[in-house]
Image 1 (spheres, rainbow, N blue to C red):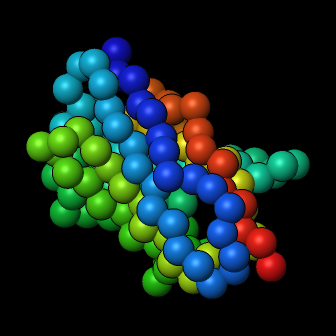
Image 2: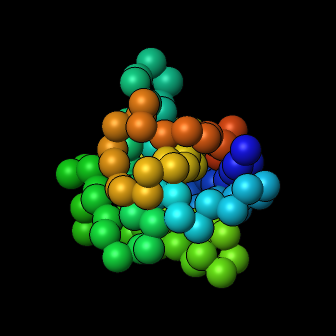
Length: 124
């Protein structure tokens, strides 16, 4: 089992920045791909960014390209999401997920473990 705990969410003004962190506990997950998803009220959960096990390969949603950066530190069992130039439409609960296959993917069903989420609210 892998337990994922997100942190770093909060309230920020449009144009501001936040850095989300996801700590992994339990079975080592350094060989797992990691993803960040978000879900706004009344909307489906969507993948924001994903990173492969080594950190070499990443993928982003079109809506966040150039603004968000996913990274990981396998020595600390951490994955991060740096969010810049935030917009009100970025407001959502952000979830961290882990995929045992190790290859970055935007498909929710590919992920084996999920965190409980952290709220991000961007005011206009």
